[in-house]
Length: 94
Image (tube, rainbow, N blue to C red; front, top):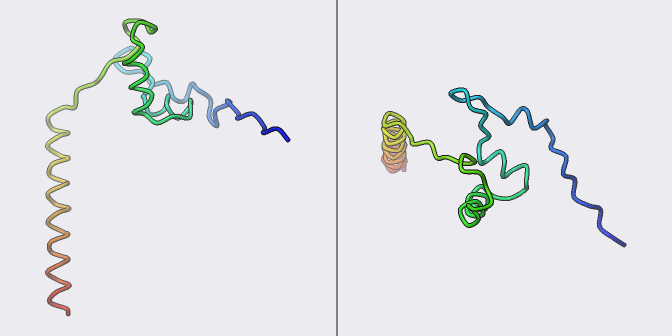
């Protein structure tokens, strides 16, 4: 008995994955990886290993603005503080 071929038809049309950013059509690596059924890291690694096969403007990396990194740091600190407070609260209740 042979296995049925894996469907390559995406659940949503590809157009929904294409975004316009600063006048450029852009597709996120995570969405492209999902379409190919691979992890984002594997997709990025394959592109880096085969740069000569892609057009020069195929891929770019957007730098995170400082305020995003600051916000992420604040969330991480707040989460750690909540965890510590929960432990203190649990010890008092015991």
